[in-house]
Image (tube, rainbow, N blue to C red; front, side, top):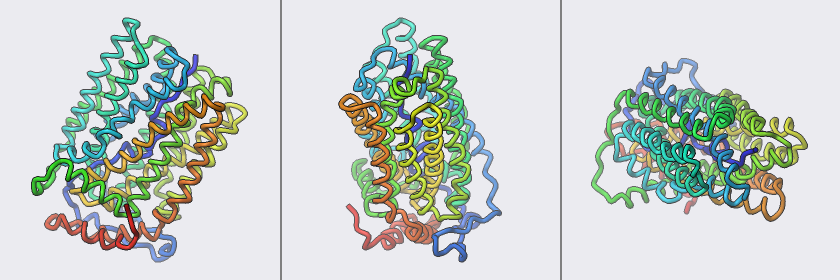
Length: 483
């Protein structure tokens, strides 16, 4: 018995994420967390000086870190267990694609509106309520598995509702971090590196083999494990320190506020480039995810336990990438580093497509994971540093929505290509798409644009003038076009 795909490792999550983006009005800490000036020795490359004397991370960060680690372990268990569960019910690639795509549909339907709601709500409460609701939700498939009435439609429905909870949690969590830390790029990269590293270790390294092992004990066991992880995460998040609520603005309709956040992303060429990379990347990665278990089983001869180890190889690379992200940003400049990591991902997927055995496939996934690990530290940290607090939720959810909306198309594309041609075809197509995306977005996220955005964001840390950042940013991007 082998597994089909599941969407958490190849993601974007990519975004951003330690897990994704969200809006949050931050308590400004301007005196200690001013933007560092560019390093003259690297000004031509867009590198920036990261002060070695970085402020200590607050104690609340440790609880947030622990909560995300526990929740990520549960995600890793489900990452291996859910496709294996689906594979016990059907071997139809399109049916498997439905389960994969269902978890991403909430972002397509409610992504921007969710960001506007998070901007209005208490974000800490949003996080723990979302986790608690997902823990309760998992009782449904647990009961279905125990009664032997589990089905593909039920798995798809549960995946959809889990994705809806993830929308609110991820958006709020991304915004809570700059609330806690301020917007100094080095401090944000440091925190995101830790969050991303442990998330990768838990969800990609420890979780998948554990999920495969728990599934051998019974179909309900991995579902119960994920429910426990959501419960523990909810309790930890509930204990986090409160932060100032968003400054009330003139009462506008939810749709108008959501539209303002989306237009802010599309007007700014740098933010648009940061959003397009995970969006196009998710088309490629979900095409791979949809057929990965089938490819591993039919072409590489990998069994259920071996599939968990294959996912672990990607997680190992992700740990390395998250660990060296700040170094790459300093040496190459954030823009160039993002371009290089995207190219590495595309080449690695082409290597996976051509892999003749499990060892080469594991190496390719490890290299791809390293690229994604670095990207998912650098991209979100940059966005958190340059986006004004009162727009953070909507900008973050818009960026994440673009990424997640693309995922269902990738999932169905992967299933269709595998059914119409060969199981390797989606992998070759995904590699080509990633390389094309890298070429298109290289100038949009160049070092020059990054440095200009960081300089423009520096004066924005003025609590008395929440609108000043809008004027500065609009001036900075004027003439770059948009949609």
